[in-house]
Structures are given as C-alpha cells and as structure tokens.
Length: 265
Image 1: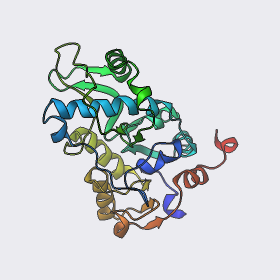
Image 2: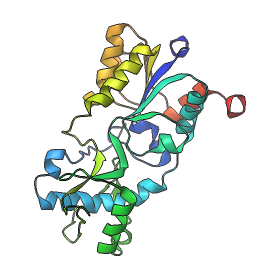
Image 3: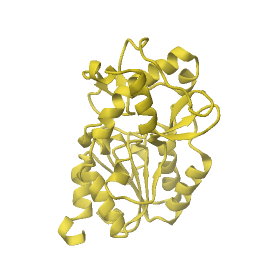
Image 4: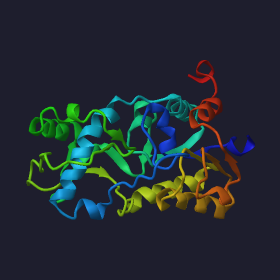
C-alpha cells in the first residue's frame, strides 16, 4: 500500500489491545458501556468508592495482559525507522512493554495515580497494595466481574470497599489518566500535531475515533492533504476523511506491515 511507504504518525486505540485480552467499548456487537466521567468521580465519596472498588479488581487483570503481535510489530517498525511518532489512546502501557520507545500516551497511563488535592503522583502498585491491605480478599471475591477497557470491572455493589487516601495530604486519589470530561494536556496535543506535520501519512489502528482527542488528528491530516489510512473492524468517525479504510484485524495487519521478525529484528 503506497500510502504507507513513508514515515508514519501511528495512532492506536482499544482495538489494538483486544488480542491481549483487554476489551474495547465500541467494537462490533459490544454492549453499550459508558465509563465514569470526571464530573461523576469528583461528585462525592460514594462515586470515588465505586470507582476504586471496580478499578481495584480490574487492575490485577490489566497487569496480567501481555503485548500481542500488533504491539510487537509497531515496536519493530519503530526500530526500522518507519514511525515518526507512536500515539496511543490506550492507558494499558502495552506499547512500552512491547519495546516501543517515545510513545505519547494521549490519555495517560493507568500505572500512575495522582492526588487531586496536592497533585503528588504515586506508582499504582503502591496504591494497589494499600487498597489490598484495607480490603483483604476483595479481588478474589469478585473474580468473575466483567472487565472494562479502562482497567476497571462491572461491579454493582461497592459500599463495602474501603478506599485509601493520599499518603501526603489524605486527599482524593485518581489514576493519572484523562477521564471523559477532562481535556488532554495542551503540550501533549501540540507534540502530536508537530509530529503529524513532519510525517508522510497518518495510520489509525483499532480506534473508532469517537472522541475528539484522536479524531482531531484525522481532521488535521485530511485538511493538509496527507494520506489517512484507518484500520478498524466497524465504522469510525473518520471514515469519510480516510484515503483508505480497511476492515481488518489490527494484529494481522500490523504484523504484515512490519514484515517478518527475522528480516528486521
């Protein structure tokens, strides 16, 4: 495909991680699931308790996920010098674990936790251990809960969960990710725009582009006349702007695009 011959700005979404066992929100045949918004999270202690109960159970599953062939293929393409910048809407950290470097985590990473009151950042593993100490056996009791793509699970009753506060000020903790209702930091967005202006084409893989945080880059590339290639099972918000739209599995597509492991390392 000649549109992908040059250096690429690659934008990945939840569809890239489904083969790692992490579900997506908007794939074909998926039930409608709406993640908690930032406004809901900070609306009161019950909402914060509900979020952390679900996130506590979901974290162990997220940590067990391993990079799939698509993640590995993109890391290979970076080593080949074919990627201007790798940008992901995912918060799972699987691109970095696959060996990719210089990844823009557009929505942050779930492996970090920030205090909403004093802004201190903590490793998620540390917060998770504190929550485990406060709620012994909680994860095991809810092992069958349905997983969500943002690292939490579907739990209906969460009133028995004890949440940990900030170690510094006792304030409210939140994963250091962009919730629905929050904005991506402007410097992060500008860095992607700058890289897109240097790239030869935009490749979108596994994203429905339903949120503006990713769709804006499709509009920018199309306005500049850059090729836009979208690979996704199901319709996307950017289909009308795409130069090429492929209804293919992301792992298979990326592995073919990167070429054999033996050929490139």
